[in-house]
Length: 311
Ligand SMILES: Nc1ncnc2c1ncn2[C@@H]1O[C@H](COP(=O)(O)OP(=O)(O)OP(=O)(O)O)[C@@H](O)[C@H]1O
Ligand SMILES: [Mg+2]
Image (cartoon, rainbow, N blue to C red; front, top):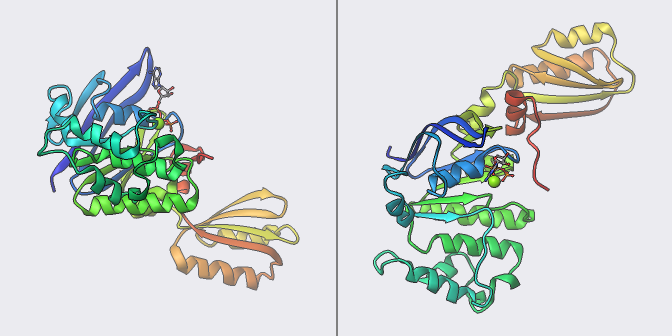
């Protein structure tokens, strides 16, 4: 498969601070690739280097097989970019803004503004100004603007942050549709469910480091345990009961007097054994939660920190 992006040993410093610290990854043509990480991880800095807005201090970056330092103009003409925050002309309506943006590109490259508005379902808002749009509509408009040069690669910086669940799903569908039309997509997100739902592969970033790159399923499978169990009991477990649970392939952590967090290895077979053992030991439980591991657990396992979601 062709590569849309190749990043090798990339470093970016602000003074002595390494915002991006020796990261390498590639993005294959046709995939949706996500960069997942908390605030300050270095996601935007990485994207802005791909977009030619910052130059790296070290390492090499190619986009569409072109070196970002040698061919910034050609790259800019062939990619679409949605920045983390965008400002538009307040006195123009949506159609006028897209028409203006289209005029910056040669006729054989530019998309039809009305068609683009239809694609993002804003055709009936074409005479409105950006500051009159809802949050979700505004995000859809910024995606529309990024499609104006019929890009081969689309780079989206937190396309759904701050939106309600319905608007987020709406944007996911839009991004999937764009990808299905043959455009490679790279996006950043704080939301693990978004990374899981949309991305074929995910890079997990933290503190300027890239700590894992793989498919969501492989990342989850890389954990030692497959289920997280939270058991709340009426009276604390006895030593014997804890030993009996420990004999299953499990790590047990006492969260409070009556609550235990159990990391259960061995898949559904050991889940079955756990439930039988609880019944056999006559454990009186108040609550039992069983959840398959998530990317949140992967992040916690790799970094020791929670991946905090944006509000
Ligand atoms: N121009 C700059 N000067 C100094 N430090 C910077 C500059 N730009 C970014 N940084 C620092 O680099 C680090 C990474 O920032 P970046 O914006 O890439 O993070 P991010 O992962 O996109 O975070 P968020 O999820 O909050 O958008 C942060 O600690 C930030 O303060
Ligand atoms: Mg950012």
